[in-house]
Length: 172
Ligand code: FEO
Image 1 (tube, protein in one colour):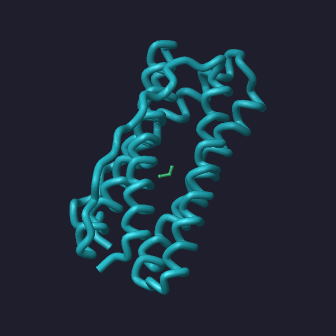
Image 2 (image 1 turned 90 degrees about the horizontal axis):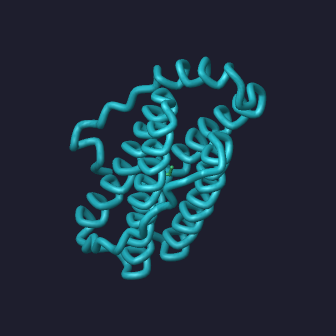
C-alpha cells in the first residue's frame, strides 16, 4: 500500500508528465506551422514519450493499491520567438522535471518505500537521456543559427522515431 504522501506526490507528477506531453505537442504544432516537419516530428515523438511516462506512473500507483487521480492539465503556450527559444524552453522544462523526480525519490526514501524508490530509478536514468537529447539539439541550433543549415538539421531530426512500448512495459 502506498503512503498517502507518496501517492499524492506521484499523482502530482502524473499531471506534470501529461503537461510535458501537452507542451511538446504544442511545440510540434508550432514547428509544423513553420514548415519544419523534422522538428515537428521530433517533438511529437517527445510528446509521446511524456504520455508514456504519465501512464507508467498511473499504472504504478494503481498496482500498489493507490488511486491514480487525474488533475486539470493547463493549456501550454502556443508561440515561441524562434526554434532555439522553443528548444531552450524544452531543455529548461526537463531540468524542472529532473528536480521533481529527485524530490519524489527523496519522499520515497523518507518513508522507507524501497519499491517506489526502485521504480523511480527508471525515471532518474530517463531524465539524464532527456536532458542530453534536448541539450544536443540546442547545441546544434546554436552552431547553425537560423540560416539554411536549419533545414539540414530539420532533415536530421526527422529520423527520430518513438514506438509506444507494449502495455506491460508501463508496469513496474
Ligand atoms: Fe517525462 Fe521529459 O520528462
